Image (cartoon, rainbow, N blue to C red):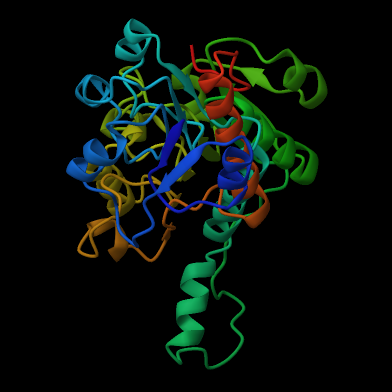
Length: 319
């Protein structure tokens, strides 16, 4: 059995696979794998541990006749053609239950940093502009007692809700396909429609998957419906936001600031207008980037692969 890992990840994955007699091929160069390299290296593999940047589509599956299982090294799986995989009996896995807390921690970090204007304050110090203490210098916003709107109340969104409600006594509103009874009972979280969330939230944190329904759902119309100058956080997918409209909302003061861990494209061009705003903090898609979480993700991806190779149910199977 042969498995391709399309990017260097923690060694826990390779250790698990090789311990079961699997031959592991790794792409270890410090750059993204090209489409041609992916097609060539995967052609005689039975399993692939893929990244969100790898397009696992019908063409690739047809080029890999022995392929049995694909394990995304991520919670998301919008890079995989699930219909084509089902048609060919190829199992697909992802890595939920491993990065919710870590990603929520980053979302909270972005929210606190933008609320307290840390990027602006640090630039002031770094540029030698800090001359004295100012009574009106870098006045930010409190979190305590404010309203948090969570769009996408999955594992990450719920982890964010707990941190904000328990840590800062924030009121939690959320949009989700189904009610989250646990959060409602323990946190007093309220399920609301999209317009209500926009109109009432002081802070909006996005944790939804990318689907046709969520594509650019945060656009000019959404920003115009928001209450006066909320703070906007996105650790989900860059494409759920129309970045031109976000730029305009920042310019007009419609929103007070933004913290983004995801953009479209990735990497974001250094010439992006979003980088010209002092009240915007952008990080390079590091939501799950801790040693512990990435190691656990690698192990779960390998476990998904082994189950697929053996014809068993995947520990984290995408249906």
